Image (cartoon, rainbow, N blue to C red; front, side, top):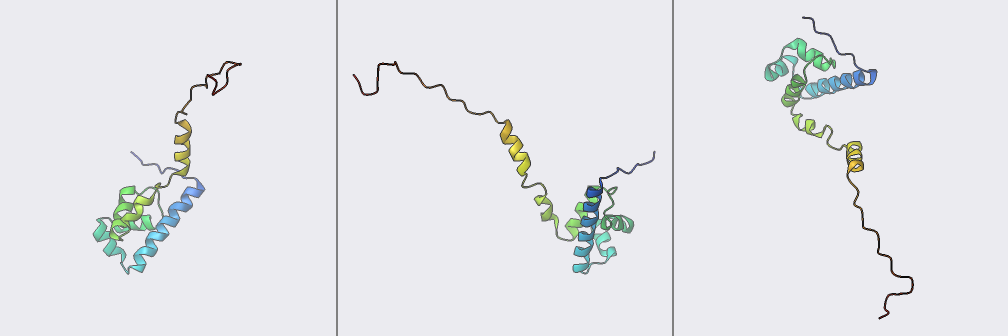
Length: 114
């Protein structure tokens, strides 16, 4: 069975490439060689090369392993943390409280008369 690559929109492909570049920059700032990251993340050198190039065919689990090795795993919890659009959509679908209509007073009576 052959594995087909899932086509990405151009904007998504650019985001993947940018993520790969940020991971490469983080590795270089820590002065980790590719071999060091591969050994600690338990992945092959070609896989790390694909990750650093933003290849979408690499499983997200490998990206997480690289983030862990680089000490950036906490950044993963920031993804979709603030979902403003989702919250607005959720709030729109919440039922609105309805009040009972005010009772009408007789035309001749006023408040305060006994």
